[in-house]
Length: 367
Image (cartoon, rainbow, N blue to C red):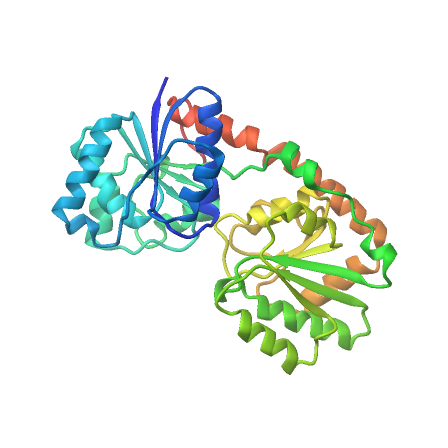
């Protein structure tokens, strides 16, 4: 059976770390020989430790590929594991561990790309993608597109395989309690979750709430997450005099419970490699309103599981929210359809099956 080395040195926790943790855990459960390398003092290392999973730590920086001692340590680690496949997370991981893996004779050097941001067309990137990387796993078709947008010859398209993130519905459902928010209160509960950062664009949602309140819509927006913009966003809420209508609920360890407390999920990100939080909302049977851009249309079906509106179009966004808020039947229909779509396309079982097929050389091309 294929021996796999997962290499993720990122210290913070995000979608990439979640994917590495879940996929490595599932492969171990299925009998694969898996080794995991996490960043020193990283959240991934802490979670692996709590889960009782074997792992090693390695501090990798952007310039580690110029450090002979660091490269020696990497060579000793990789040759000691002797993997058939190494799956790398960060560009810095690729520059250091990817190059060393090639020297060590690892057959498959895989870069897992989770961000729908164009890759720069530099000499170093051309070298890495043409001579080091043997395959790329992208988390959406949009991510795959952005890999090649600045250089269509950076790597052959048929070497980029799309494997969507999946949700463990059994575990998710064990935490999820159906909500009766809109019937308990005479208002619709809107929700959004993500880092409080520029790319997530929560300020747009605050402006949407302002328009809804102006039009007489009874609503409350719960914003989950923490981040660098928290103070600025809270100040903006005060500036718009929206304190009774916007609540910052912090980081949510139990996202299923958060989803159970809302009626409609909103996402206003400027870009998403894969909007996993959309899948979580749909799994909880919540209709979605989001932009018709980036990878979102690959998840949300406009007019069936939610509404997709033109990017940054605040008027239409508010209209679609009102349309759902005032039609309980439509909310339920979209919610039910969203859950069905998750069950058919975005389950952990399906993602794991596709990853196994990829590792065993049975997954050829995702167009």
